[in-house]
Amino acid sequence: MNGINSVIVLFLIFSVGFLLTRRNAWPENSTSVLSVIVVKIAAPSLAILSIYDRFTRELLAAATFHLMILCLYTFILFLIGKGLSRLLRLKNGRAAVFEVSFTFSNTIFIGLPVNQIAFGNEGLPYLFTFYLVTLTGFWSLGAYWLACASDSAERFSPKKIFSPGFIGIIIGSLLVMVEGSIPFALDSALRYIGGLTVPLSLLVIGANLTQLDRNVLRVKKDEVFILIGKFILSPLIMLALLKLFNVQGMAFSVFMLTAAMPCHMQTSIVAEHHGVEGSYAARLVSLSTLVSLITIPLTIYILTH
Image (cartoon, rainbow, N blue to C red; front, side):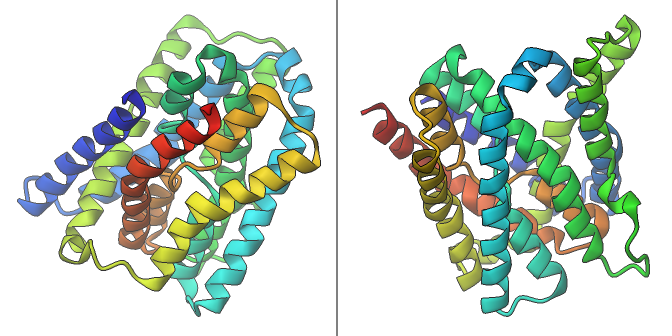
């Protein structure tokens, strides 16, 4: 029930952004301003602290084998997503959003409370190993892919790969590897700023939903494929890889449950930031999160029985 409650909390915050926008209670450019704050300031701060707080040099080294499996899993999903977007004849920004949404899941904001309830603190190291791959992959490949789909005249640049979020990951990892420490004042500032990531992201997603509330129950073909990908294909691919590499025990359970999470919430924020189908991305996040109210309890039941 706590896992379900976590999903309900997300929708309650969605609704605040939705109502404020629907009633014109804040300026028209509010979502753009909030998305810039999240992408360039809050998310990088959260990335630094997420790695700094939860990893050690030993844990990073011990996780190498699992990291390779999870990277392979992510790469396979990305290839399948690209293939499906071509099959569905999606174009430009919509294709990029589809492919990124298909590849990356909500590992931490829903995955963390759900895994902690299902398996306790014993499973958290495996969850954060998964999170490290998701975080790195999304803020490098995912952010770059969405940036390239932008209508702006800007062409390829390494700066698109080294997004603020990815730079945050690099800083956090370096701090862990050198066993460095963050000064108290800076640490406190990063925690306050990083704490803005989740609520501001949810407000932006809710605001974007005002453009498609009337058609929320009309699920299109590409949206069906996203749902199939998140809740059927993704767990099946993970199962095949874990069996192939003989991963068992708690790692098996945590990786399987986390592979069945809904779309990565930040996809909508980065898409909005680059002006690439932000409403479409928000819809995919919301639909998959709604469906997860059913699939998450079912997945936990299967894994624990």
